Image (cartoon, one colour):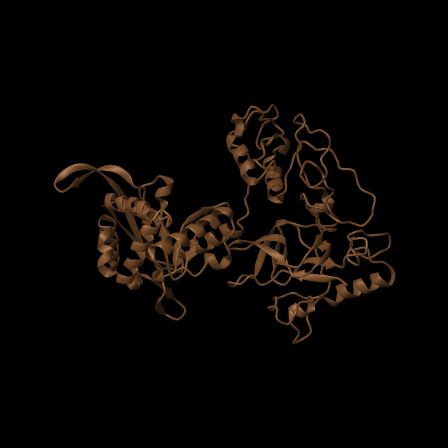
Amino acid sequence: MTQVFRLPDLGEGLTEAEIVEWHVSAGDVVGVDQEVVTVETAKAAVSVPCPYAGTVARVHAEPGQVLPVGEPLITIGEIGADGSAGSGDDAQPSGGAPGGHGGADGEQYREEERAGARLPEGQAAGEAGGGSQDEPERPLIGYGAGEGPARRTGGARRRRRAATPATPATPATTTPSTPPSAANGRGPTPPSAADGRGPTPPSAPDGGRAVRVISPLVRQLAREHGVDLALVPPGPTGVIRRADLTAYLERGSDRPDAGPARIAGAGAAGRPSGHGATTRIPIQGVQRLMVERLSTSRREIPDATTWVDVDATRLMKTKDALKTARPDAGIGVLPLLARITVAGLAAYPALNSSVDTEAGEIVHHGAVNLGFAAQSPRGLVVPVVRDAHAMTTTELAAALRELTLKARDGKLSPAELTGGTFTLNNYGVFGVDGSTPIINHPEAAMLGVGRIVDKPWVHRGKLKVRKVTQLSFTFDHRVCDGGTAGGFLRFVADCVEQPAALLADL
């Protein structure tokens, strides 16, 4: 019996996802809740576990393909007595149905394909997958096979396959490419050492180092830029990652190995042609979300910005004192700024709001869900600390630290990237003093903090060198006037200059 695992509802109103990387391919044996694919939504990259155990009979989408929720992801077949795929093997004998079903079994398989896959009314998805009644229902998972192009991706995994003649690996080529049969979805891509999806030949073009690439995105970028992956230095694990390829491309024509077959835009004699060839980059995933959100913000929100320079010397001394007194708490500058921001929103609650244009209402939020800008491998993201108003400074520090690590590892969930009511943007980490940030729609305000540097400052009537930063505050003029915005910014500035002032309201 075969079982089809469909793209589940990932929550947060998401209706589609892009296939980033398959962790299994046809012939692999998988267990219940094993992660089989990484997908990218408009909000996060998510590793999706499969609720079925068995042998992978078919993958229904290629990396880079966008699937609506409910479309087939992968077909799982039973494990045969010899450990090979039972009714779901990826071999296809002559005259058989896809997946190696011939005769009566093939007719049954094709009938299941035509029938589609929907659960009987009233039956839980977990029951169809062999789960117990106590297991939570898995959304949009049905039984039967679906249509979609098959693709086999690589990975250093132990595979249990049917006893079929092995195809020798092709030697590494100068420029990785995808055969037409794989590009148009009419057949699987033969494994090759150049793109990291098959056995490695005894020698490689660079003098013995075998090319190891797992991510299909890396191979795609290499093709777009005309880069020979055999020339890209791998990371510490020996696998060429996206960061390795990006670093190689940034070195550009300064590389001694730059040549006509390796750098896009190079001339016939290997000379760079101006600034390189024109490229088109699809707007997808997080970037698409940011484009839509920022465009909506500029289109709908009449924003205004105000700023002030502040003396942060005592804030830095407070940070050092807390580090000495509570080294385990890990309270740095950002948690202190977050604590001050939450206190400011308690004093000026009108700024913790959003505008409901359809209802014609300004919504004042009871809870402070504090977003903060962070860099990730997928670009700028805004993780959200929920119920920040109910946390101590130590708890805020822990939450910020956890979300920052997840952002750097690209492991933020959609729930951790949505629901913010106010954003704190510490752009000082980029070495800049000021900015006029764009409000994170549908929020109504954003506080920006520049770098903290030594500057001449008049302190107690004398010119001294102090730790100075600039605070900028962008707000939606529909929710408040300049008086409220100025009052909030001055409150924050006073707390930065005199952190002990927060004690008055604790």
